[in-house]
Length: 266
Image 1 (cartoon, helix red, strand yellow):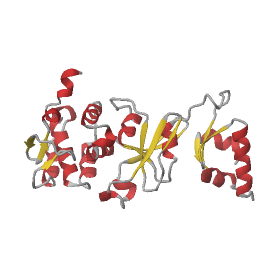
Image 2 (tube, one colour):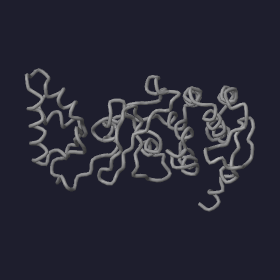
Image 3 (cartoon, helix red, strand yellow):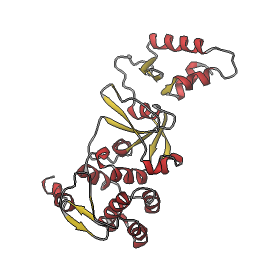
Image 4 (tube, rainbow, N blue to C red):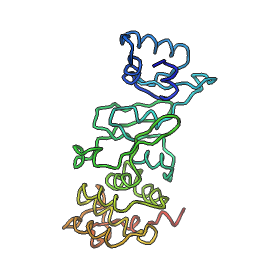
């Protein structure tokens, strides 16, 4: 494949992807491919994001003015990488606040780095789903900005940010963001949640119960979650703040979160 043809369909790509395409039907060495990449970088056609990762500079744009799309970059950090947590909410247009920190779900060891003002951080899959296909499901590939982005679905993202609220921006950001979503496939939410810890199941169940009318939550969605909620009271999060015990989820919820007092000053 000609480099120009490859660049037209791969706005962000890895060295391995270029090498595979470059070698199709031709007996060219990896050294030749490396030389071509260096030439394109020197000519301003490519921007080196980090070692082994490149972004295509659009025609007519100066390399120093070009900004690589962070979602495309995040997807290429590892072969199993997926945009997740708050970054997934942002990709789907449902984040309450705009962040420049992008969480990337991957089992690979990827060092965090900052590029063009955006911080990209690898997050290991939750232990309960680490060995499952797509880390428990809910990972899709979306066409985006001339390329493709692997990203968690809104259903998977709901479970993820309730499983680890810090990666969603804290309870207020998580709550406000999820309330921007008009529709969830609730059967998918339940299926994904049941693979997690009892605490996460309770958090998901409590959230759905709080939004029964808005999200058309039925008892058939809540019942399997109730059956897998903790048997003993658990604090809502690691801060172990005192609060009200919410049944049947056995969650001790701080008053400001229970009453959503942040809404009073919005």
